[in-house]
Length: 205
Ligand SMILES: Nc1nc2c(ncn2[C@@H]2O[C@H](COP(=O)(O)OP(=O)(O)OP(=O)(O)O)[C@@H](O)[C@H]2O)c(=O)[nH]1
Ligand SMILES: [Mg+2]
Ligand SMILES: [Zn+2]
Image 1: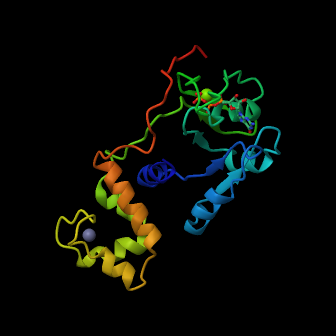
Image 2: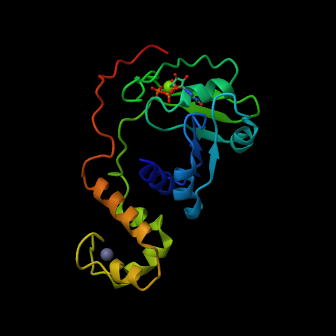
């Protein structure tokens, strides 16, 4: 999900900021170690944390919060915008998933200048709208290696030259695996998000 959101942001010329919430419940180290080497900017937050670093990043910009239901988007908006009054609700005790509390996207003005948009949690996020070349453009080290690919290469088959490119040490295998996961999900393979045990019941905000 994060990989796909990053590619969509890249494709739309949106600057991403990985906001790792609920750091009081679990250490963000694993996620950080995965995205820090790729140069993805990130911030770690939790309820009651000092939000000034986040405020600085958001000031005088138009930002949109996207992520699964229950990750704490509205909680964050309420902390950033004192009278936002966004409804928040508990996550399912068993699945840890949210209850699709927010049912509309709302833009709120930040006290420090700029806007923040709270959105309903997404269950899945596809890249069907992003052309292959733009997915590839998110991986410059790999994009360079596709010059030897046959015309119309899907970069997923035997004929793809990227395996040799990676074997020669021009890009790392992790990136190639990530690129292929993204291309697979774009082609309609199953989403990472298995069906929820709960039927979403949108509530009024
Ligand atoms: N422990 C802990 N709980 C948090 C934190 N942030 C949010 N929560 C809780 O997580 C639950 C879901 O928070 P919401 O803000 O409603 O999540 P959301 O992302 O807006 O969810 P949707 O509107 O359904 O997309 C609530 O019970 C929050 O109190 C945090 O930093 N730590
Ligand atoms: Mg919400
Ligand atoms: Zn290829």
